[in-house]
Amino acid sequence: MSKTRVVITGLGATTPLGGDVASSWEGLLAGRSGARRLTDDWVQNLAVQIAAPAAVDPTEVIERVKARRLDRTAQLAVVAAREAWADSGLEESGMDKERLGVAVASGIGGLHTTLSNYDALKTNPRRVSPLAIPMLMPNSSAAYVSLEFGAKGGVHTPVSACASGNEAIWLGLDQIRLGRADVVIAGGAEGAIMALPLAAFGMMQALSKRNDDPERASRPWDVDRDGFLLGEGAGVLILESYEHAKARGAKMYAEVAGAGISADGHDIAQPDPTGSGARRAMERALVEGDLTPADIFHINAHATSTPQGDIAESLAIRQALGKEADHAVATAPKSMIGHLLGGAGAVESIATVLAVHNRVSPPTINVDKLDDQIDLDVATEQRKLPDGDIAALNNSFGFGGHNAAIAFKSL
Image (tube, rainbow, N blue to C red; front, side, top):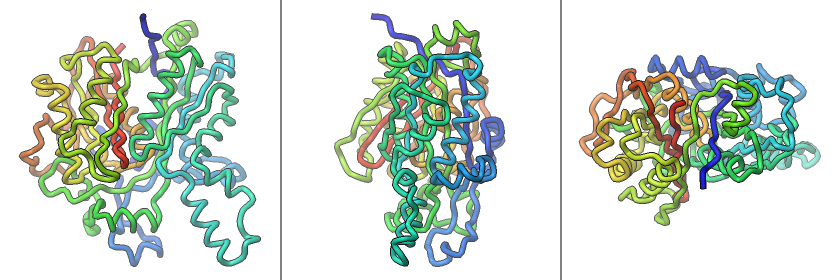
């Protein structure tokens, strides 16, 4: 049975490199870091004092009254969704909103709201906001995006740690292929640069402690990597059936060829060191997309800059692609934007789509000496991709053993 073709017709993002897709993409291509040392009072006693905040505060973009009703994570999601929607041209299409779905993910949810209202509770219960629950609930971003655009199809919120953004795209792909929607607003967001996550991740020894050199702290695949850099932001993609997009004359960036989901069944925080779960996710994405390893010319790796995770993923890529991995350029945006948790997969899917669309792989920065155990063609400068039909993979893996790989191909 033939599959319904699904294409990308709109992109929106707000990241540590810029408040929109164009500035974020320009920053990635230039190899610019969005990391900095934090100056907030609450950071002074923390072991880790560096992060990659959003380059543009979402409250500068969203109307003041609306911003006060949204947690920071939802603010970021709405900013990215507005750009993607405008980019798609769907507002002028007069589409049936009952055929419009939403899948917007978060790894943690409304943490700013949760912690600020807990502080209020300890002082005086009457100071707790009456909007606290709709602001802190994990589905808040998806719900507010659906309200923003009048979406009346299914509204979903994957919460699968750092695989969440990719899982949202997988859900959107399935909604369209199952005939339940013509268009899905899909993506992920996270705004969790706060004392608790920095302290907790720091106690796990998961974060880089290069406080005096934040721009060089995130160094995927480098022999001296010592943990990831916490980032924040959002990415949203408009997924649309090819026939629906063609009928309205929409521009198309790339096709969502397939998605692969798997679980490690190994540990709550550590990846399976053999890479078998990640391998299965990539292989399933290829099979679902009717692709072979020879079709893959670009790999947007999860590559967080953790000692074990980077090696496990490298093994998985080699297992999934075999010798064909030799011609696939591997890149790691987290070297510049840090780890956006639930927003990572969506923002990096946008980077993958643009790499395929523009035929160029962004560089990975801070790779001074490639780890001998990383058997990949790592791009440390922009790399041109070939003409003709090409495909790319975007990997996202999360605590709990969640693995999600999305395959995109050129049009």
